[in-house]
Image (tube, rainbow, N blue to C red; front, top):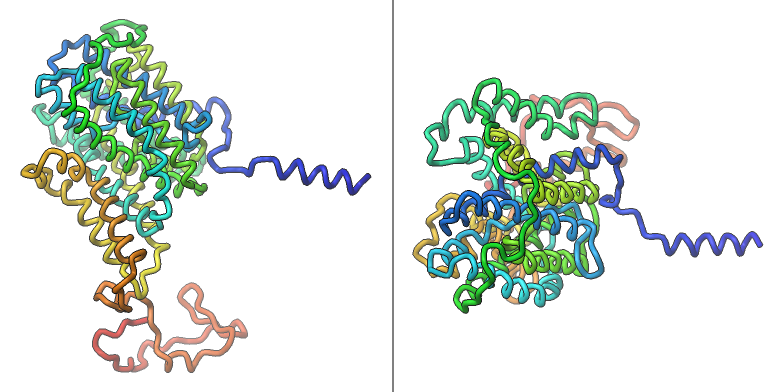
Length: 508
């Protein structure tokens, strides 16, 4: 009987799902507090797209408000689908979804070309449907994303987001008189200092909520200084539900669909990079099946979004940084953020309240958030083997290629629009280059020779044989001291003559 019970216990255990870091459940209050922090982090980015598109389309303030409400509503629904998931849809990772900034230039071009918002909606619907069909194809190339590729892309994500943080810190509105003023940058600096100070506090709870608390305190300081304006919070409706096709039924124009399809390919590339990045940060497995489910959630959300007056959806890279900073890996925390986004979409007055948070405050927090993404990528790159291979030139070229449109925003202006749409994004530029070079040097090895480049030669650590002769079995180096096999410290003579080495020989 005992043997049978043990067998039944083992059988039950074998059917239980293995624990994943992202499945951790926090108390309800903490879950929504951390979720609200995610909302604050991405709020500026999610409302920027409808503001830009609405102004380009010449919409009234009321209609632009509808676009913003729709963006929040759909972002919340997409986040819930991505984090909680249903069969075949959703990566079940702590990823915040929202309107993709990658599509802004293309949508503005469609609107300015005479198609208006209906042509944009139609192009998004068709391109998202095609993206939904090809999502599994993208997921199968996961084996071509080793650490040399993922580390490069994650690092580039962080670096490409730094101009966003800088723009926020300067005030966000380039046409404003106080853009780049000492007051704005000073407020961002104070917020940054608060993040660092609160992160150092002994309480783990305060440290994890450092971003949110710093934003709240920074906003209060802005109120006292008279640079925060909450006067318009009470203007407009309190409750509003996004009306289907309120801004017009979709129209379908071939040129608009083709240009938007290119954008969808970019979004698929960036979202897959974000899935791999957050998987690396969380420490969980991201196989092709999981990536495909995440991409399907992206495209399904984008397919439905135009019905409510919104646009293409994608994962928000800045929230990947928040996961890394707070060490809160629970997908339910991000799902709580999705619930808050849905409520904000239904309660415009709440959205107006958060919108009143000074952009400079967001900028101070953004420096830490986006820098953390880059640091996470560097940590991944530290796992890469660089000896006697071409990995160093893959990293160097890919990051440099991704920085081109950041360092020179007009770099691709003379190229065809479809080319600029793809490569104007530093993230997609870096990802495509890293994948191509990894294939060229690490998969298509025909013609490769050992140490075929200065980037491959001398990248490994080397120690002379004569230096090893004085060491005995069990000797070790700890905390700057050489310890012999008996546990005694071996004295180091700094005056000892250094043996001559051949030019170019690496040191120890």
